[in-house]
Image (cartoon, rainbow, N blue to C red):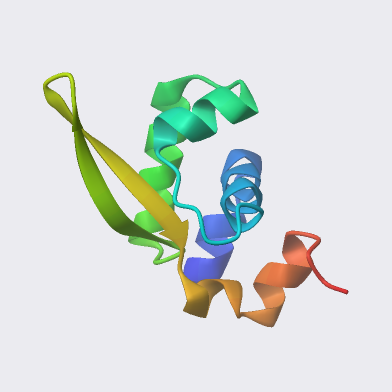
Amino acid sequence: EDVLTALRHPLRRKILKQLIGKDDAALSPREVSEELDTPLSNVSYHVRVLVDCRALKLVRTKAVRGSIQHFYKPSPAFVAEPTVAMLLGLSK
């Protein structure tokens, strides 16, 4: 059920593809929003949904101008699901 919830929305699929495509690099919602040219508020909401679905995991935080920036990576267990690769177009 978490897999379906995570992949239900097109923006969540784009976010996952963006993060999976970065190999081992962690990205913040701000970086993802800039790369996808999507409002930060939309990306932040969908990142929270992906974290709740255990598709993304928080790997570090950084203090930036009085706030905390969060950096995420795809969860290895989530990415290993055959359904995820197929639905994201990552299958070989």
